[in-house]
Amino acid sequence: MKTTCPGELKKLYRQGRVLPFIGAGASISVNWRSDNGEKNGPSWSKVIDEACRQLGYDDPDLLRYRGTDLQILEYFGTKIGNFAPLTNWLVRRLDAPDEAIKRSTIHCALARMMKCSKFYTTNYDDFIERAIRLSGRTVQVVSGERDMGGSGNEVEVVKFHGDFNSPNQMVFSEGHYYQRMRLEDPLDLKLRSDLLGRAAVFIGYSFRDLNIGYLFDFLNAMLKTLPNNPSGRRAYIIVHNPSDFEYTLFRRRNMDVIPTFGDDRTLGIVEAIDDLIS
Image (cartoon, rainbow, N blue to C red; front, side):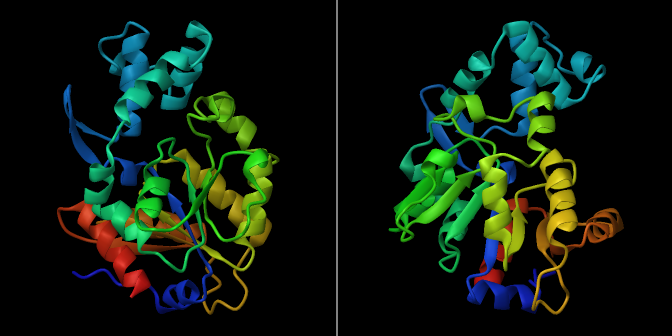
């Protein structure tokens, strides 16, 4: 079954009123070969597995039985004293060469979203900004207030959960999430501003992502429906092989599901993006 984006979303895109929000599903699609063998952007699950390993647990399920992923990271930060060992591991796992970015069909598709002047991501890697730069556009990375106020001619890539250049602002643990859920950080204020008159499109997320929950509670509580949009939808999400479960719970949050189908999730995301910009 072919992916079909809502006509109203396509219209918003042509007007430059779409705000892409990129999750870990995009990073996982990047693959490359290094001296240590084949690599790809690590999933959230692999990050938790590594945190458990560094804590001395060979079987991560022993900790998962006792708490959530974010609680495991809270435990990690408390026991180790900081997140440096985990972020250092991540840096080594995310050393993709430019050729790998060029081969990533998702990142190439994101770079083709020429009507989008702002991209948000909860990923820590630099894959999105590199893909856009490789396509010939100028990029301003925003991970804090100090990065705001560019010339206006750049494509903004907003690191909503920080990045390796701003380790103190990285959102890792349950405590970090609770702090961010207050939505009082300069990046939260920027999001409110950037969403005015725009619709968010979430790419590379699943319903299990905590990001989805608090962001959409924010969208519904603060901004309600999008003016001049026939359905009033403020947000859309690309979901692979969705069931009634996803349709029902996302629509309850005033989000429209853009379904993709088949065995290849990456291909589905690319087809959805290409349909949006067509």
